[in-house]
Image (cartoon, rainbow, N blue to C red; front, side, top):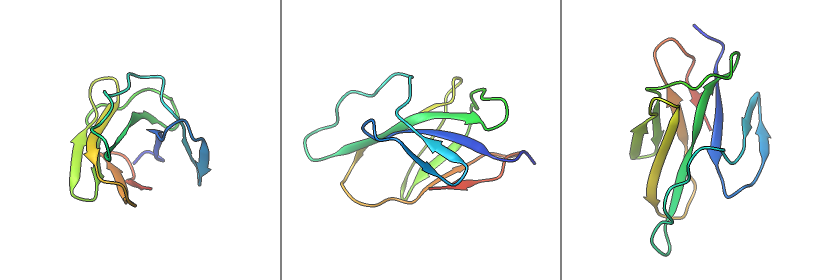
Length: 98
């Protein structure tokens, strides 16, 4: 199993370091603005060692989910404000929970 996944999350430009995983606003495309009162979670998932994008990563934010595309990009839209547990997983990698 690989050591882990480096996660780049779109968090309104807020930068933070959580454990070994760096969270930052991605350079990838940004989704259209959500309807008033809702939010989006988006970003790029890359291999922690090689920094290459990882396609096919399952991204789950409570009951909402998606998979990364061929450039590691994911987007979950129309989320209600609140706290979410986000899990990133793919065969061959250790899952990551934020």
